[in-house]
Image (cartoon, rainbow, N blue to C red; front, side, top):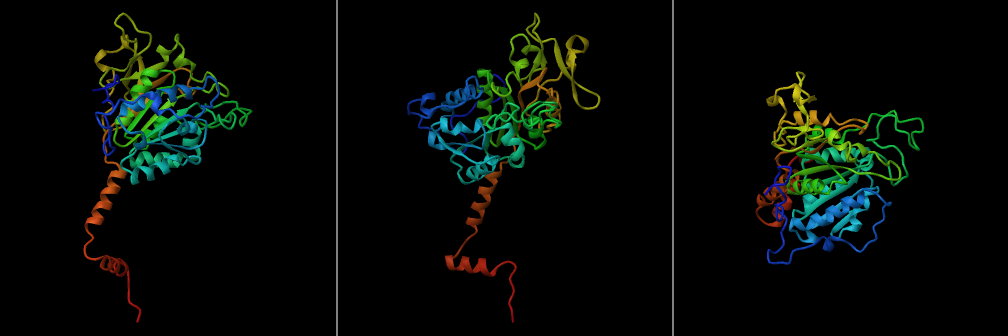
Length: 367
């Protein structure tokens, strides 16, 4: 079974995580919904993501006690309160570090991280890139609204240059992070982008992310109606989204724009002589030259080049979909294997092992 993005759908149970008894009644989203009052501002994109996650979790086929959500600090980090699973509202930027320990110690858990652009990319930047580098078994949902919402509207690491906020009254002079480029540069094995208001696409990407063995990072464009309303209007507005969204579907030519009679967009991507990619009119090139998206290639170069098409101001254009999905050994699987190996090499009595530990290695006798 595959998603509409051409990527394998979530399995019933994930490797190492016990699945439900196949004879057990099918779970529903209601069973994953806690009794806590959801407290976000009216119109916040977090509501749509929460509903999608609550509805999607039953499809994993896992017991609720085998699922854990870890969050940092920020509006998005209230997420664990609203899910009837295990959860931890941790400290600013440190959710990936805590989730790494949890995933390594508890193979029986499906571990998720919920974070925001400020939490993940500012104080938490180091933890994020090393979780991606290590390829720990976790799924990271990065809510990007390009603003600090919980602390009332300061500019964030993804705010566009010139952004006027309470902390940048004359306009930000910072160059913004591109989270997808950052994740690909850190050798992330699953990197994707979706939109809070596109329920079908969001659910499909979540399904693929959950099925992935290793670190999955999903950037979710999420609107903040109070402090940064309309940041993603171009990719959400019915009149402009066809021209603004570059859909990435594995195995298909990358085309976009208002569909013509053939149902395909008039624009596409081709490789440049310098090794990057650029937007062209399909009518101006040979159809065979159009780039076919390959999310499974080991070399992340092309995926990175596609990520660079994201407009820094998010006003005109953004590739949406799964940029990369490849297999690589995971940190926690290898760490557990080392522990098992070390335990298997221990022989003799407990006293003998203790004496060997104390007297072994770099020791010397004082005379």
